[in-house]
Image (cartoon, rainbow, N blue to C red):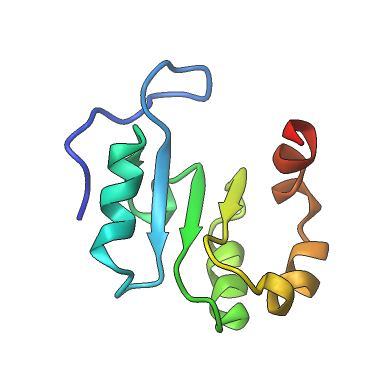
Length: 102
């Protein structure tokens, strides 16, 4: 469910971050958490980031990342992300944010 906050209009905007939640069928509590954290839930095509809710489907994440090469970060909100390691190795730009902050 999309949030009711106003989306950003550009990369330097002070608006809330535009975050896609995928795949379809992700739990509502994840969308609620994005909004509660100040984000704006948007379609993948309009997103700057992605919260991925399928811990056992790296092929579907790869398809989503191919569909949206403009994403700047992806959150895998679960333990056991090793099944995604090959995919993330191919997309190092998605990891830079984590490396800078930690």
